[in-house]
Length: 260
Image (cartoon, rainbow, N blue to C red; front, side, top):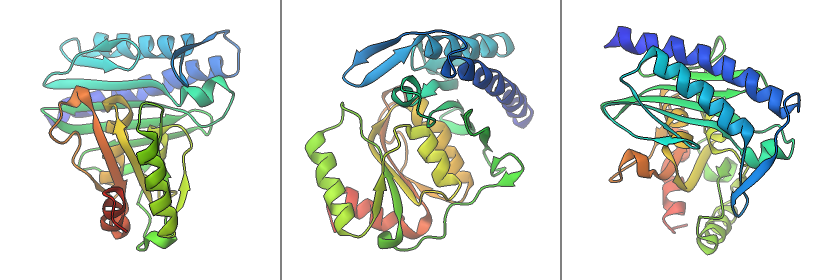
């Protein structure tokens, strides 16, 4: 199976770079597009669709028996499944903000095997393969050594489908505990930055699998701790995400669960 995973990793890396180049052409408006609303502050564009089409068709050619589940075109899950968000952080993308990414993950028999988060604007490709560490270019990633929640920089994701009052209550608890909070608007990239030690922790009450899966593998391979995902839910349904450096994980869980 290792050789099969290796082949998929090589293919995914090549496709990620091709997809990143296409996405940048849209971002810089070399290719025109119009933004469309799917819901309150939930945006999609032709860039999302074309990038996903590129990844979907490339994977289908190379591995026709694999399943594919993408944010825009849907799909299904199975014993071998690709999970893709063509542009995570579309709200940033369509406003010209340089904090968005492409997220690609491969799951076999329920196990995260490959995770790629590409930040085209920063020219950073975060890559993990189970058992082989997490990398950004030639640099091996390690989560931060932070061991106190009052020293921690926490990324706390929020989108309108989440309960606003619960989110505000959690923010109050975290701020009262001394944590610094950010929400940069692209969950997959924030997870990659936890793996890189730039954030100490991440929390979001629900993430779709195309947003969460690659970043969770990056954090695990960088030595971090993650809440079992998707827990008791099906993979397609997604679930809550808690992920951090080991030193603040327990404190983060207590705060998320309503305890100081």
